[in-house]
Length: 114
Length: 111
Image (cartoon, rainbow over the protein chains, first blue to last red):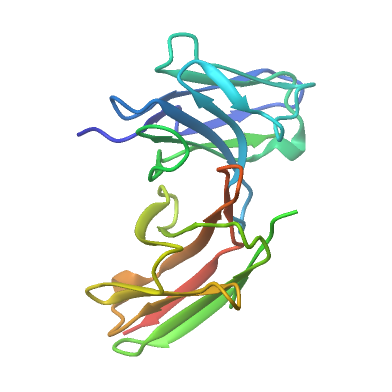
């Protein structure tokens, strides 16, 4: 079975520009997660979806970050405008059903804001 | 709030030796404790996990132990090989279902 697919793998933008990341979870996985991973640290949850509903977005900086999962499958995470401190790896993960299952991660998008 | 402390931050061992990484936590309601391995530039991959109703789990050269009373859990890798070199993250699932990760341990296995 195909794993979690993310694109792009790398993105370099100038500050104040918008940027979007895309995630395709494992087929049949209802729960989707977006994480932020700073260099030398563990992943930190930004938002969790159960199907198309965002059930935990308490750590998402809503002034500049937004996410959607319109049909309960693919998801996009957007930053507008990007700031220097947003440079990090953005990881997507999915699990089969509910929050009790194993989470499988994508390879991430490495964002560099100049 | 919930917190996971992971030690050491770096660990260097000779090939064939054992490596032990320990994590401590504060939320007694945590019930699921996975360990992820992340090679440079790659995705975190689950290598072993343990649930709160058992104290130890083993999978070939990898084992995890859990002490719920003392609120700590550890990863044990025996007969280390150069390909075990990576960053290892412990994590726990809190009462709200959220995974909280440790800070990571960079393991280096020298041939």
